[in-house]
Image (cartoon, rainbow, N blue to C red):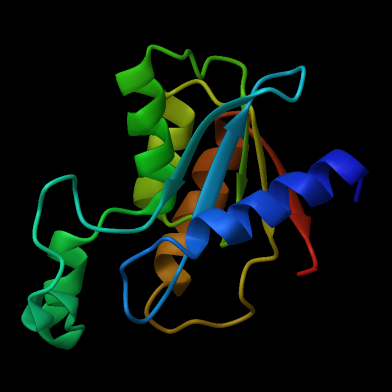
Length: 149
């Protein structure tokens, strides 16, 4: 891992700490080819949506997944809001992306994904991780997986 990569993963960890998700904190950083930060994102509720209501954090019945946005997509949305182009950019994220986020990464023009290694087994997300892996490969997105630092 290069010093820049280590810095961006450290930034991912900091950004993840801002998450209001009570069970998992994820951070994402989008950078250009010259290592300028274009955007950051963490998993959490949409802007101005009340995150205090406990039932919105519940995994039962998938409730939390209806309310909480993933870090990768939040970083992409933030880039759009600020007018930054993600075409040809690189993304650093503290968790391997799900299929929904992989689609967003591909569609936004990000060409390189740097993340911590995919979990060996996660019953809830194995299928999504499989599809994400296939899509990213077919779309030509370079995927670099690192051991956690």
